[in-house]
Amino acid sequence: MKTIKGLILGSAAGILAVGGAQAADLPVKAKAVEYVKVCSLYGAGFYYIPGTDTCIKIGGAIRLDTSFNANAYDTPFWQGGAGGAGVWTKDYYLTRERINLTTDTRTATEYGVVRTYANIQFDFSQNRESIAGGFTEVDYAFIQFAGFTFGKAVSQFDPQWALNKPYISSGFLAGSNNTTGIPQIAYTASFGNGVSATISLENASPYRNAGLYNNATAILAPFGSNTAASYGVTSNTFVGNSYGGNHIPDVVANLRLDQAWGTLHFGAAMHTITPGFYGANESFGHPDDSYGFAVNGAVEFKNLPTGAGDSLKLEATYAKGAAKYAIAGGTTDTSGGGRFAAASGNTIAFGYVLDGVFGPGGQIQQSEAWSVVGFYEHYWNPAWRTSLFGSYSSISYGDGGNALLAAAFAAGRPNNGGTLTGSTGNFDFAVAQIGTRTAWTPVKNLTLSAEFTYSRLEQNLGGVWNGPVTGKATPVGGYALSNQNIYNGSVQILRSF
Image (cartoon, rainbow, N blue to C red; front, side):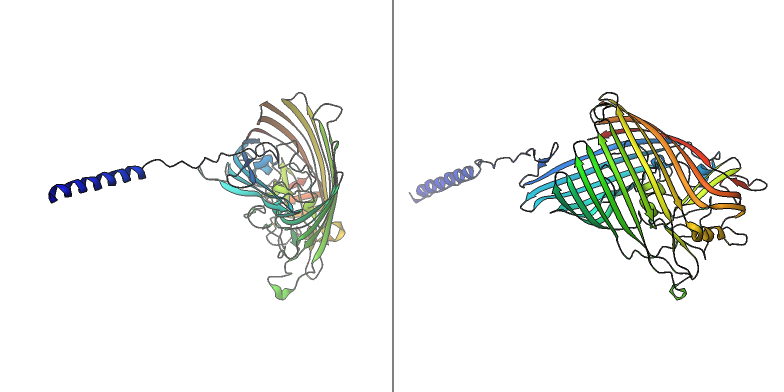
């Protein structure tokens, strides 16, 4: 009986255990899936990050460029080398591929919208990278909060349409043209009716430091080698540069008016020129710091009577001791290190873009630079548009600065690459440019465009350059100094998303 009772109790326990296990395996009601929701507060393309009140927009582009008779960025062959010399061994075309990724977040707070923005570029450029190489650059990375901007953003000196210029080339001289951002701390105050003002502290290196020549040393010759490019490596590391440390940030301010008809912009900047030593080290002493400045005015007219979407943009800049605010700003100076040089036949033109010049025991002689720029764009229809653009940029050094530069090319000076004989005039220098681009957008966010640019290097030097020119045999009697004409173009496919 005990055995039967034990079997019955054991069977009951087993049944209860199995029942308990099955009950534990029964499905529990799942938590509802949290779907990504559209955020319509800040325009198209924004979504709420799940579980937060922050909206995010992820975008980017793929950009494919081919330049003809030009360097990367469709920069004319005007910075020495085989291209500037026009020799057989130059590249007749250059290709570049770019992947662009952006993130934009917005969060509404009691202090206003908190915004973060980042733009990262992945580039591959012919002759710069290995077969499967490439490089990464960070154009923008900033936080905006309660009127403040912290990080790498477009300079406050530039007009509002700095990123909306109707051309392909970065080699077109368009004033300060800092389209890849400058580290800054800025505050913007809005006064209503489209009126606002901004003040900022901006890091001058490397964009704003045009270079500073110490007459006691050699200067980069017209077709001399510049092993360390000024942009993207270290600040202006070219032969003859004597900039010291980055001691004081540039102080920049602007006043803007934004209306339906267009925009009006006035900017100003204070730029510090910190010199190196007269000799090899601090025991030789150095000139005093020098303070330069720049001012600009810009206007944009939208929806002109010539057609819907048409626009006209005009800008003028003057700079003293702050040359890159007016000429050769942005990525133009990627390999020249402050020097422009081009040759054709037995003639050459060359000049320098510097903040100033000094000699042993002397003070800095500041340069003066100015530029005027214009862009006109016409829409033939929603898919086709053509732009016409032009600029004139000039730099001068005054009697003191010109004397110091001329002395650098006197007979017997070491390592200057050559001499000037029968020299007349001065080192004042100008660049005139005109170009046009036509773009076709067959479908939304896909644009194919082609561009042509003419540039003229104008100099005030006469005489003969007795020195080497890359890839050429030096003619008997040297190279006559003469203005040079340069033609280049580019085609591009751009897919944005």
